Image (tube, rainbow, N blue to C red; front, side):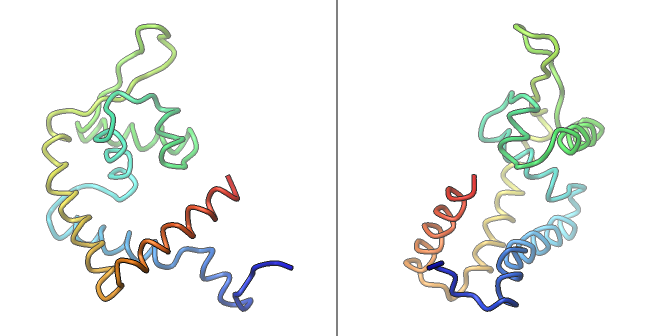
Length: 146
């Protein structure tokens, strides 16, 4: 017997990620209000590079759950904004490694602060133990489907 405790209408809302979309919209609004010329999609690529600079475009695809054309477009636009640079890999010149510029490194503290502020607003009134349970459940859901 399936462990589906959702009514048909609720399941669609769950799958579409209303909460995730609301958080992304709020963060984008904060970026805009701060005068940052940066989309949430671009920020997600920068975030991965702040964790580990010099990733390949394929590694960025895997880390951000985006396809190659999307990552190529995002990296192109980040390059135009002078936030990243492509450098051919030493061992395989067909592979470009993506590195942050100084300008992108300077954005890290400000954007991460805005992201933390947004998450704090989103989780206002949610007890920490409930957040932990939510994380555990979503990890199981992800692991079941990957």
